[in-house]
Image 1 (cartoon, rainbow, N blue to C red):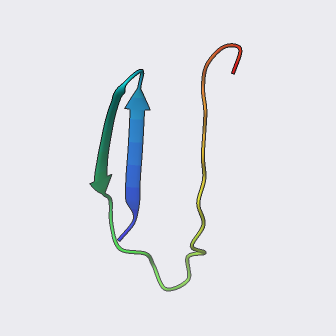
Image 2: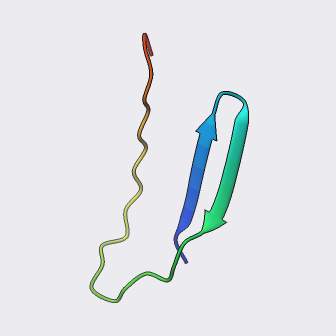
Length: 37
């Protein structure tokens, strides 16, 4: 199952999205949105 993690400030939430498809590449992506990071 794909695990999604979202956070704003000090609040974080996680949940399992769906199963990986057989033809889908398993990869990790980290996206940061903000100023002066």
